Image (cartoon, rainbow, N blue to C red; front, side, top):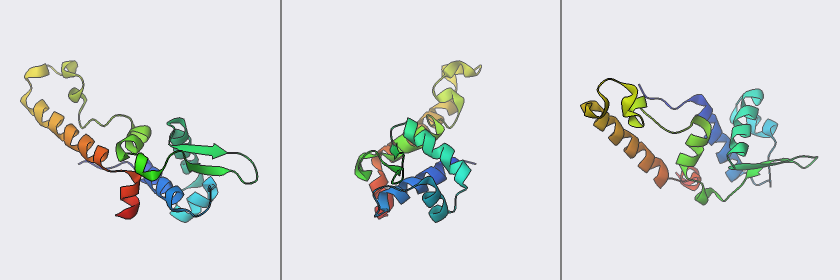
Amino acid sequence: MFSVPTRTQYGIRALVHLATSEARSSTSAEIAKAQAISPKYLEGILGQLKTSGLVLSERGAHGGYRLAREPESIPMREIVEALEGEIRPVGCVDDSDCCEQGVDCLPRRFWIGLKQAIDGYLDSKTLRDVIEA
């Protein structure tokens, strides 16, 4: 069935750590230890979050990662898509030509509705909501 990939779960945990940390920034080692995530795996996740503009990194003795914006201005959909790409329960949601039935496929309407529901929920929640839940 549907499940959220580990990469996304860990990415959200790392962002929650950064959002709730009293320190100005945290190293990947600090986040990995606090969140029980493999440091090497976390580095890749933080790299994706940096590339997507969700975190900033600073080098040096007092360097580390920090949020690029306030938690209330980071929609959960942006986080999920930064780590996994666009959310698609099935391929035909965006491409009706991927199967023989095309636009006449009745189940496709269901999948489109599911995608809209997921997108709507993720758009309605921010990182701040996760922290305060």
